[in-house]
Image (cartoon, rainbow, N blue to C red; front, side, top):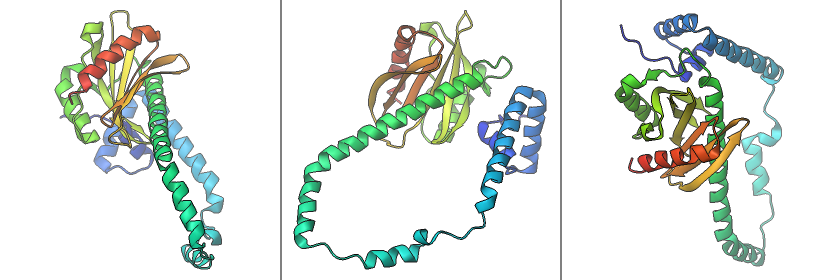
Length: 257
């Protein structure tokens, strides 16, 4: 009997007791066979209870008056109208600064979004790369299924990079949960046992294009960029000069998607 792979979403839903009974039983069986993952799930549950306990004292408190919608509307009605001269001056200043402010907003979104993606990739590497039992949900032998699965969940075509020219084999992949939605993670290794992780997901700006930028978190280094609203990052415990040509190869393969 073929069961759907257990994903990060399933693990969090298991903690939240939001799974159907049959799926919950499948997850429980998986956790029994994977004590390392079970330990992570136990940590999730502990954090959940700590958060619930911290918020319990204020859960039943009334909404502060300053956040009451009717009060906010009434206070705005009572504000004195600005003179037309002041309004005109503000409009002129706004027109003059519009271009700069818009550019600033775009740059902030691009920078902050890529920084978040880089952190997500480094975290995924730290969690899954050391796993010698089940670092991926779907193995390379089922790459067609992996491609369909992640493309469906990310709601757009995703191509699994081929890094054989760089000496790395696809081990497989999985979906990982991020604060920006699901991301596709692909893992690779070489004959020395070095592992690389590629993480990709849609960015909040669906037209975002950025140059490739180096990034590092602790001893995990790599490169991050965006093409056509999709964010990509390659990370590993290797020097930047080793990772950069591999990142360039990934970018070249991903662009036609």
